[in-house]
Image (cartoon, rainbow, N blue to C red; front, side, top):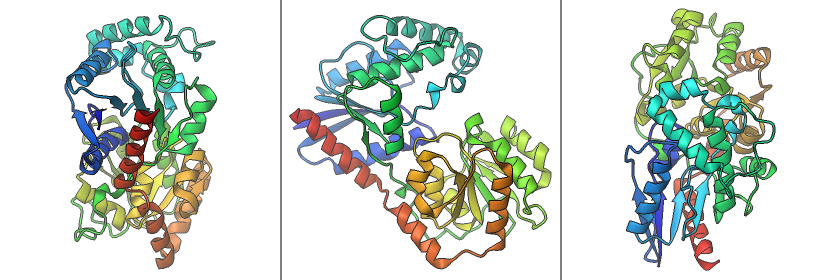
Length: 385
């Protein structure tokens, strides 16, 4: 028997939170008599601190674990007596501009959080954790330094590194010293119970029979300004097709909601975070999902949309070419003219039933059962090696 401790402390409505909740559920259900899975759930321990890693190490000892699976890039700073598998979702923050500045980190995690981060960074500077990622980066924030040092440490220490796509695996191999070749294992998208009876239902606040949809966060790399500009440039307003945005960043009173409403007025509908049943209905009813992210590790929302039958307009970046294949309308990143043309084309052309079936089949290949099955195979490989 192999005893595995899964670090399931990350929670929330974002992609990594979805990965954590869905994968731990699938792993627990799939593990047979040869595997005992223990999940360390959310504890409230400070992120980006030495305490976070120490807690994981103690939990592994308490579970008498033979293997730890960290579902994000952070592992204990001290070497462990048992193997570690780590999932690295993307390398977005190797671009230090994507990390928190010290003042931003303080606003997010408090002055005590920044102090704990500083202690962790000092520890990561010590041999053998220095890594090879920091040439020419003097003056970067503590969060940026933590990220690159921890990522290098994790990739050097892990027995296996899991990525959601071959694209991220290649990016890691290009930028990070690795002890082993990354293993791409796609996420599942069947958590939405696609095909449920209420798919064609109504959504409070969305009365228009046709609408464009954005789902996700409003972070800079997600392309919200480009989406707003392209929507204004398209024929959507004149056609009475509003832009609906769903996600926690679009709750009442948020900066993203204000940005949306200031630019588009009554043509914008900000729903905030919605339950899966409503999300499924939005995907099913939307004319198209528009996803203009400049960087992704997998692209969960456009695949969710495809699985529900929606057409998708997405940035032509390597990871989305990999995951969406020929079933999305790919547009030049940053080109609002190209996006507007894609929107106009979709508004003018009725959906084709055969194309809809094809994209649903393409997306439907990704299941959490298959994801968990492949990861269980990795556990066995680690035990045998």
